[in-house]
View 1 (cartoon, rainbow, N blue to C red):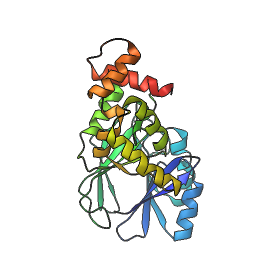
View 2 (cartoon, rainbow, N blue to C red):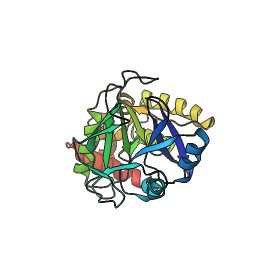
View 3 (cartoon, rainbow, N blue to C red):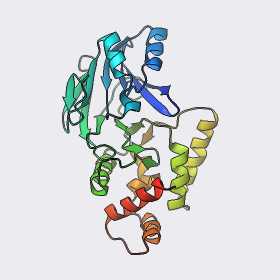
Length: 265
């Protein structure tokens, strides 16, 4: 499987998935149609399908125009009830792309929005992702961060993040925003002595200086550097306890506190 990013707005990525023969593509969360249309025309490709993670406009703003122009198939969350959807999806549903070449299992990931879904593909073959797994997780999990909790509760959002944390450690994580350096800056206030986090900062800074994306990440990297996946670690708990001026024994409480600290960062 070959995957490349298209830049949109100030910090969005629209992920492009190539078919095995390279003649067709699918796109994930096209908030803007223009970069997709330009890419398709420049490379003489056809658009086969669109995968949507949630209903926010910076993820769906280009869907209707792309559907009108290319008559592609649109997959989206059953919970979002979007008018352009051809196939509505929920937990444990399956999406097959390019004549069953790629199979995605659907993860319901409420928290950022209640209908948010992710697309998980295991045991890839071909090109440079041989044997890998990957997940398109929208705004649920970012590199060294997570999305804002617009609709869910801490318990709901924490559960969704734990669902992602339990994927195979080598799973590639494709989120939809280039928020990495800002997320790392906050994560350092939570765990200033986290050696893995400090190394990540150096590596990602070099990428950004070259205007390169810091994505994808991996589940393993997030478990070592992302405070929102580390709410049982003593260093993260202590930061939350200092903010709350009390002891915290529940990881959900720690998550809620760290999320609030990030909101005010």
